[in-house]
Length: 117
Image (cartoon, rainbow, N blue to C red; front, side, top):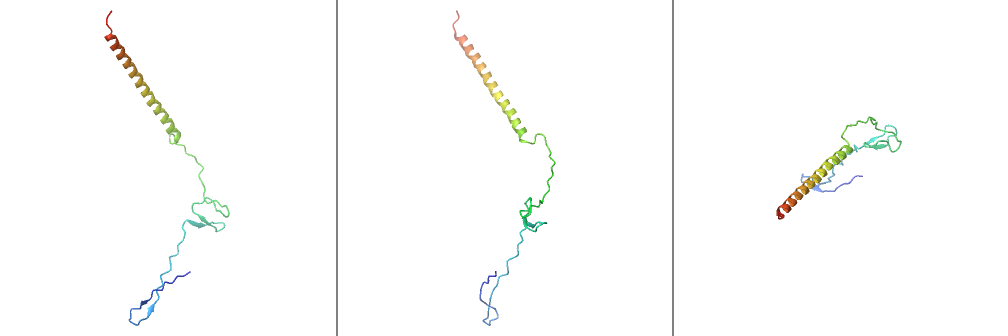
């Protein structure tokens, strides 16, 4: 499909002739994300695991599982529980000590204000 833009201009030689301007054709683009399946030549995405037409698998996966201690989410959750239990323990211990200090002060002030018998 060719589109011609008619842009009539003087050819520049003073003859009054007009030239038709035709833009260059658009560059041919290749879709680099697609490739041909080796079995059926169907166009497949480079991210596909298998051909949608024939079902041929493109990738092989390594079945080795590497376990790194402490790298999973369970370690982080366990650490959060431990830290939060120490935090709440410290808060409760502080409130307990504050209560004891208040009792000592109140009983001390109370006994100091009581008249001797």
